[in-house]
Image (tube, rainbow, N blue to C red; front, side):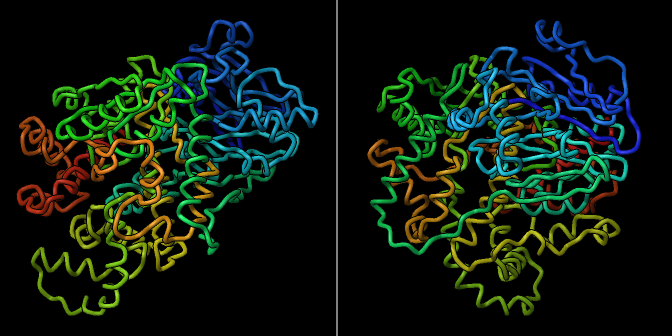
Length: 632
């Protein structure tokens, strides 16, 4: 688990100050080591950095001043093979193929054995070297063989290609900026903004989707000309003519119509989850499991015991999380694992509020409790934490999924939409409901965010007129059943939202989150199951619940689904500091002439609906995002 950065300047060599500052911007991702590789005038040279280990500094000169056309930067969080043999950028024996890699490959031991049988020898026990030699043997076909989370950059001087790759569901982020002058990339946007080829500009198309979906839909970001490499894809740039091509190396399997019983599915799911957990528990550093008290994480903790009898678990306690904390404790006693509760007080939640909000690189709509979870793990010296994230998307876990069948029936009455002329709030909500023509629209509505008409009333007309309002390019298969909704959950709820936020939260404190529910075999198997086994429209996660029955106490199985986040509405109502914080930032935002000040005042002064605070928080976080990335 690390951070990667780099650039390729097409027409001139540029100062190494660029890669040094890019690396420094993501120091939090890898405090254990630092490395660089620069290429200019047909020669590549490896360098250490100020934060490199002493042994690496003895092996490579410390990068100071210099110019290059290509530069790779790397920050290391040592998880597997803690020795200097795992140092990056890593070079092939002939120094013609260079790799930087952020992530973990869980099947690297199997791939290593296969490569050894083909004649390859290894100098380290790292998964990075396995990826490098897998690429040497199989080329781009190697990416589909990798089971894990990864963002990779490969410079292949033999074929004169530079390749950027991202894992199947986007667990590891990878951003890039492309212009006529060059290509710049990195694990976080913060790094890209330190490069002289990149200028921070607002991308209002990205902001528009962010306001509608609580996240910016990939490949867009909220920065002009900065994109998110889409999951399960690789981008190749020709070093000779600068041409770029993109390819997918995997796609979500379609449901099969084979005759399989629920009993068979439960048995197979149980086996695959055990296999995934056993692989993801592997590390050369301490590992913990974060338990929220719900089915997803407690099942992981329960099934971890046979593979690690001394496994540690912990639960984050915050206002109104009493039931989750109680159930997590019950579960920990039930399967006899070490368990600690970390209580996050209101004071602690608010202590670094502005800094935490600005760590994220786009507006968003919550207090991110995972930052506190990562800090606790860091303070307890846990570098690796297993998470239940991904189960809600994979197994139909969200409550709004249960409204799908009703919507499929009600959409037949969407013709009434043009005949709703009243302007009151209730009428507007009804009008919004009957404007959901596509599965994509139903997914948008389920995200509890701003509605299209609200965004239109909010944004300055001059800005709004330039926004691309036609979102059909984000549409997927539009299948009129659960399989169609599942695609949107996996691509936009999971890849664009949850794992992206997870990564930023965890890496702020140099912690690696792992996701046993998101192994290749689990995703492939569950995706291909008949719909009736995965989704019944009555109960969330029916298949996972069946699998969990023999492991978990009844209290956990019966607990209703709750989001893992601080109750922002509680803070707004009960904390004057938060209200003052909101007013201060809204007043600053109103002066920018981006948004209609009267609409902002209306939203702030008339919060009637249960989730009206979401829109306010999106505006506050927009203001803080703008301050951080455009004013500082």
